[in-house]
Length: 264
Ligand code: ADP
Image 1 (spheres, rainbow, N blue to C red):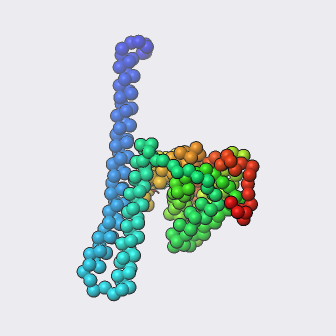
Image 2 (image 1 turned 30 degrees about the vertical axis):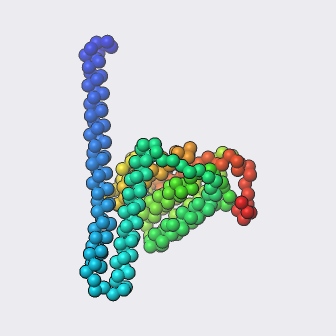
Image 3 (image 1 turned 90 degrees about the horizontal axis):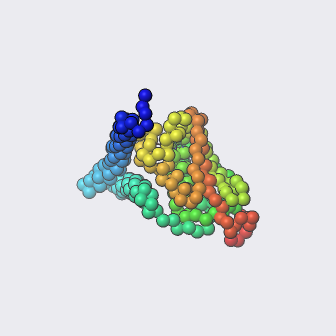
């Protein structure tokens, strides 16, 4: 038996703490290694395509249709690269507590409509129906661009993990006098209980083959928290996923709801 004060007890405690720390370091190094290998792959794929098409076009002899196709691919792949780099930069800003919000009054319905417009073409490719349910006009104080980034990420995930011909529903409602919720619901592949606990961890992906950085949900959760909100997830494997973003209502608008067709 160990007696407190006995140096053997203290050395034992110290050894187990050091062991624990060493395990943590190994674990976090492993996570970083996985991230570096997956991000390198993510960056290389569009770069290979950009390089391939530019060399092909430079060699000449292509008709206008083929040239248009090549330039279109170069442009799309460059956007993908910019998106990846921005995601990494946002993550690093959040890590260093350097993301500054530019707050203003935001009409949630308008913001969600804009979000859906941005992702419409991608959903269309899988014939996925995007539905918006928002009966009332809801104002909140938020950074419109950052919040749109969150909803875009959530709907983008929903599209990515949903089968063709399915539906994704975005809904917004007041919860109480002080809070509102936006929910993104899909009927896609779902997430197991064990994975659900980890999907919001930075770099975590259920399957690295799906592409992406594993940063989207970690960034989204932190942006929501910067708005004094919460991001909650519920999912059932094989059935679908529901992500709810709860945000405080704009104080100055409480009890002052306007019909959506009235001038602001
Ligand atoms: P990524 O950019 O890799 O998608 P995220 O942080 O957005 O990173 O998501 C992490 C992981 O969570 C995804 O790789 C996926 O395994 C899982 N996931 C996220 N959203 C969904 C969803 N709607 N349905 C099923 N799995 C999801």
